[in-house]
Amino acid sequence: MANCRATNWRRNDGLMFTPYLNGFRDIKCLYPQPLHQMEKFLTLPQGQFQLRRFPVRKDELLQAWDAADEYLLKYLAAENLSAANSTVLILNDSFGALAVALHQQAPLAQSDSYLSQQATVNNLDLNGISRQAVQLLDSLTLPNQPIDVLLIKLPKTLGLLEDQLHRLRPWLKPDCKVIAAGMVKHMPSTVWTLLERLIGPTTTSPAEKKARLIFATVDPTMVLPKNPYPISYRLENSEFDLCNHANVFSRDSLDIGARFLLQHLPDNPAYRDIIDLGCGNGVIGLVLADRHSTANICFVDESFMALASARHNFLTAFADTRRASFVIDDGLSSFAGNSADCILCNPPFHQQHAVGDHIARQMFQQSHHVLRQGGELRVIGNRHLQYHLSLKKQFGNVQQLAGNAKFVILMAVKR
Image (cartoon, rainbow, N blue to C red; front, top):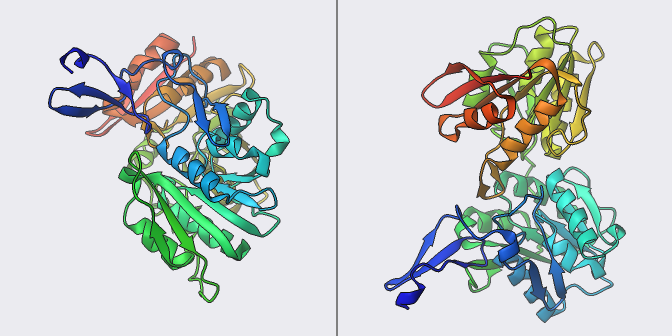
């Protein structure tokens, strides 16, 4: 065992562990083996599948599935719960592992993430499976048929799960099999309470590789409480009412980062095309539209609920007096170069439960491509994220416009 001291091994939950003389010590996945040195294939009773995370990165650090995916798929095969004549609905399938493995059942796959949907499409292509084998639904689109089997990957935001269960409950057959899967460390006790309150009695499986399944039995006599989503509040110091769907960040009130950025918005009348990148409920673009009456505002996000909230808030504020664009996208992937004067961005620093700055760096790179010469990218971020390093590398310049104990506001100009 002493010879194994420097050897790292990959766990099924995506972390690394290092064997030591006194046992195994978990470490953060900061320097794992790149993808070409790791297992790329998920082997299951349903078959063997090659899977990749999305956006695709060179020398990817993480797997596109976890132990909860494996546990759920092995259970389905053992219990024969994904028969060909059953309607299967999958919720929150991060990178398409469940949909790809169950493609022969022609499942429905509902997600609030455009990136997750693109991962599913890419992984279907990667395995030579027709894209028509899986019907992709966004988080606000209901199925068109009753559900026999509901498979849930527990999302990071339980408010999203609550809203999903409210919307889908009428579509569940009385004998529908409802199974939720997740890693034990990401399963708060409120998950059981939520499933019992909106579906019916629950039981659990033993933990396996730190994953667990929760089984809920549909109670047809249950009277559902009112769905609390979307949530609305009045934007402070304004006349704007903001509507927020369940998966919108800081849906109950204005988050402190947005509040700080609102105090330091650009005020250049020459800006004609402005992008609110990662718009959330659209509060930044909304205030910019109010201050820049002739500017074209474009709201961009990868969350269907976020973009729906931004659209609703803009139309409520301006009715038919102003127009704006609303784009669901992987950052600015679909945007033409040299097409914007100003981009404002509060980048996410996590993708599901994985933390990192790769999405922010992609946003910075895309922004440089999309901005016209002399155009600016204005970014707010936590101090510890050190975005100034990435911005300087991409733009060749960066300026701190403001800062407080938690946040900095940075500006980079395309030369």
